[in-house]
Image (cartoon, rainbow over all chains, first blue to last red; front, side, top):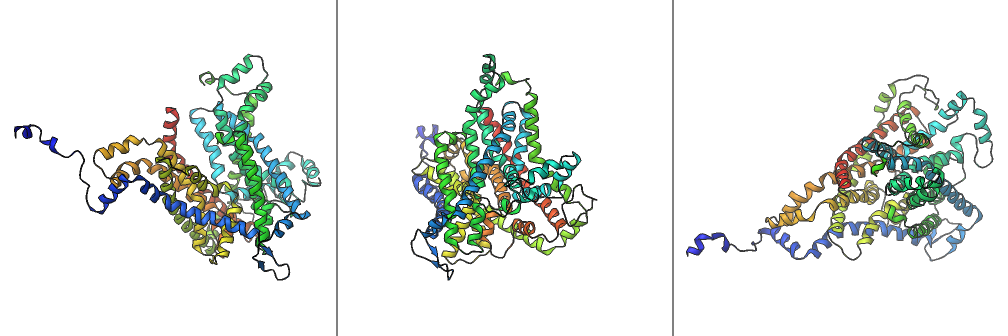
Length: 322
Length: 271
């Protein structure tokens, strides 16, 4: 008995009883069977994304194997490859080629413009400046897509800012000369491929800066110094040290700039010529033309191109730079 | 990188980086000037005069209010759905390793990794195959799907920084699973969820491509703007709306940055 008095707490059970009620029982059940809890947590998001998203993608894919009756305009729900055959008509191939060319040029230009910003932010910006650079890239990235395009409409329009600026600088002849060029020119910059190109670069640029900056941040500063100590010129250091180390970041960024350009239809619609891009073709096929099978087949093009692109990027180690 | 300190950048790099940043920001600032211009018909620069009358005109436009109200309601509900799905998913992915974990992270990212037009037309063709009429809820369905990723990313990053021993300690002290969630896990991830929610709201508020495919006759603010860009009715009203949209999307971003900033710096210094 005296033993009990000296250490009364020792007799308390080491394992507490359940806290009781449904809540306690449920809590105990989850503790004993973590798999059940995991399943319950995963079920809603997986069901949602699986049914709503993957389901829709399959619906889309299925539709691309249907065909449209040219006379009645009705969709014939029978498996056929005819729609994919239509994709190889000269006019459609033209659209695909134009879009891919634009995407490649936009990617290249974004990389060139992004590099100095990313390099400065990664190597020289510190403390308050670093935060400012980060916000300076994040704000344009997140700010309204349509408003950004609208702003460029104001800049590129015939009576807009760029014309005014060039007039002040007495350089209007340069603009006129550029606009008279065959493919890139037009009535004004806001209805030319040059305009489309500038706006694409502008809108996707932050998507390129961030991964390049991340890649450059991992380059030790003394590597650059060692290179110059060994007598390399800045140009040589860039070619042989910085660029190869930044390349996975550039490839990672190019995934975004390339993919986003392939799919976009708003920018070429608002600032561009009447010659279509893939996105616009998809939009008009499903809307005014009512040819959902062809629209679906068109969307398969960027998916396949991006599939190869991602495969190549993975081999270059770009995913580690994301 | 100690040797970098005190070293300043070459002039050429400074100029190139500065020009790049100007290129990113000048067009946005421009929107604020155009909201006050007296010019009605065209995009004349410099503005012939400045006025605030267009704010009053915009205020009295019922179509603008309708679009704004629809956008806010869609964004609020999509954000709520994304918060639930994203938190569940990130909690599951970060606490245990299980078969198919990579597939699930891919599944969450896919709606935003593939071009918007693919998500949009996929949803539209699914609606038409399943005979679902367009409504408020078809827009929400699309928006919630791509908003999940933002919440997920923010929450996963926070879960990785939250040490598991805190949860164990809570359990050792006798708290049940729900109490641990309520008093330990939730306070830890709250700011990350708030930041994720803010970004999801901004993303939904601004989304145009998926919306054009999932909306019937309803107009969200971006759809309204797109319509005005293609077939302009009253340019100054568009200018004012553009400025308001800019502010409505930027404020949540700044707030989200403020909420996640401290944690990221701590995580960075711990490396």
